[in-house]
Length: 404
Image (cartoon, rainbow, N blue to C red; front, top):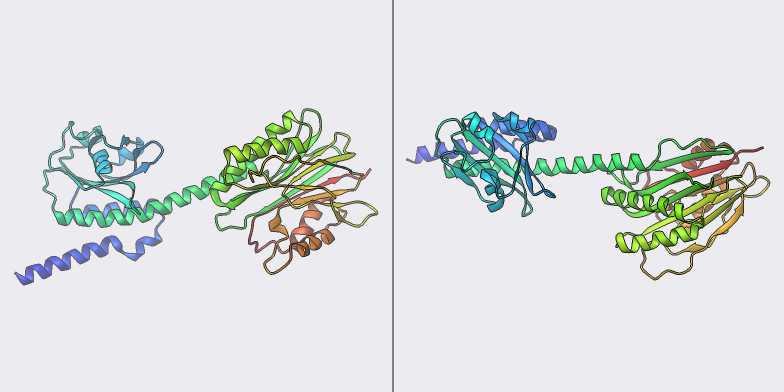
């Protein structure tokens, strides 16, 4: 009797090792799902195995990986929480065993068509929240045991870790795609002007809330924006996208940068509560002679003029967007923009350094800007200010009026 128990314990340990093997961590998520399903089919002696992950917004389980039921994944099978076998596992968050599969207790016709006779399913959980359902099936009647349930729950724990890694990867991919669509890799070619932009993420995710934007208005004026939404990651990128689009819309209804930012402030306070945003909005006249600028809690841009020392633009800095402190009158500053001039707008990540006064970084930037083509301006600034190891996102936009 003792020897039999020792043998059973030894078999159990080998089974556990098979699904917690450290080498599984070296696989990407898709391969890891497939490998786990192959191993659980072998360990439990079952014919089918499937992973269905929860679509939180739809409250539906989506077939994500399968062995013996591959068509389920190809068809993108979905089932609502609470419906059918997998839906009951998700609803109760408890293991469910079906000794006999019928069309009355399953909603996936593939299970019937494949000839599955018995099913065992367990919930996939993470920190008390449902992630999905893992189930196995046999083509002949099977009485699943408590030991089978325990082993499948171990596999579900491993699937949970992989599913979270998968979700994080998908979030990052979505954030990168979003940011690439919002921050132009190439700026428009415009008469009498040169434009150059640079963006460097300051976070491991590769995305954040900094942005620059350039657009031509129906009046012929050119809109130029540099902004910074607080935070990092997908959420900041999403808020940034909404703020960017809103400012474009307000630019169409107002030819005053201060008024456009006032409207944007109301939008941020009401719809983006908790998101603090700084922004600089400039409008360059059709003849390129003047620039109208409004600044909302943002660093003032640097202006380089032929025959003059570089200097910060003498503009009033109004409160950031989204503070909720009422709507004080915002200011618009109008400046001359003679041929050969260079205007450089940026976010604070370019000049802020730990252990150094903010003004020291601004002074270093101001001194670094040459009266040169904008690509040379951008390259000089980025190399002078050591932007290869940023601790915050960096956005830079340089605008040069071509010499006559």
